[in-house]
Length: 113
Length: 111
Image 1 (cartoon, each protein chain N blue to C red):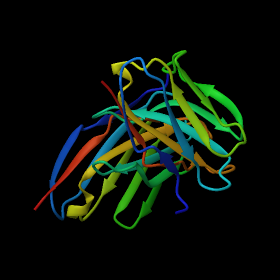
Image 2: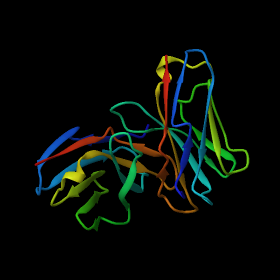
Image 3: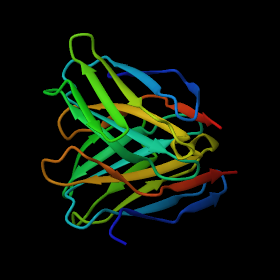
Image 4: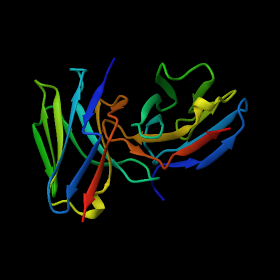
């Protein structure tokens, strides 16, 4: 499969626990984006990387959220001390070079109980 | 900040008829306008896009128009089919930056 992949696809956690999600972009895509989507809404931008550099973070990304892309390939998104309001679909997308087109992964659905 | 407004939130059309979804954007620097289709439980899929140096683009039954002066852009689907039923998102972006999405239009194709 040459598309964007995300792992896990579903995660149920208790409030206060830490969770980590992984995104593998399309091979050779140098830009990687994280979005969050809640029910009935469009995806909301969280952060993005060009290679290993994190270039922008949304105000939505509180101090409990951190993202990394250490080798410029896969990325991880960690949420510490999860809250019920963190329940959402976390989507990853990637794009290549000067192309504006972003291709999305299947998402990780997080449920915080 | 950047904002994208999308209308209507729900649209029902008879199979074979046309559907039109309209969006406005706030950031005049936006120069890329993608449209995504999202089926229930699936990832958003890019169906068509337009850049600010073009006023219209067509791909088979789908067309997009852009009015930069008014900061409006629209999606037109002709000869609608049952498989067109989904949520459609308009979006705006500046260069290769983050995409700002509208809230979506749920399109129902009636038999």
